[in-house]
Image 1 (cartoon, rainbow, N blue to C red):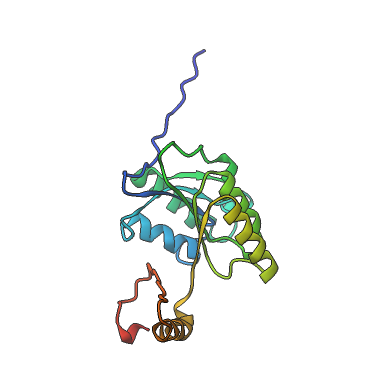
Image 2 (image 1 turned 60 degrees about the vertical axis):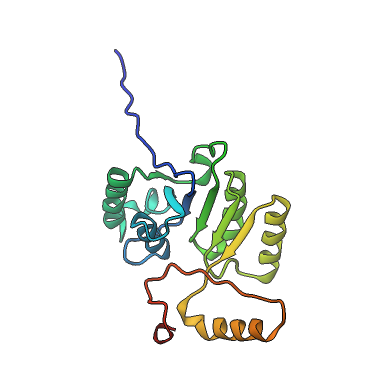
Length: 197
């Protein structure tokens, strides 16, 4: 008896894109990770190609619970329309291809972030976008920063619109300090104008 294996094509980035692993998608219309996925799948971030989603809850014990059916529908569509690969852990994601810049977008539970950061580094990610708050303690954040620096991995940190007054204060401080600058990057759907801030 000959067994036929179905080969699934997986999304690949163009030469000017980073290969993105989204860790912690969450439930459609509720999870922050899901919103990031929708932005990338909609080509709202042209330098990023969503290739893999790591979602242990909805691909495991949470599949039959609340949100499980919605996630399964999203998964089927993302696989069919965008060739996104789905996995339960970062260690299951195929190795990074030589010459490809791999980015992990970690949008999981805060308590898991230190472990996930280490797993993302082990999976060949050279840049990690960490959703806030990053970790449960400052000591964990400091350890994560050192771990990333030791591996020559860059970390970017997310922020919410509800902290915009702090963003404004940072910009004002940078403007008043010679030689300094602050750069913020947002993929939110808000318009880039004063009334949206």
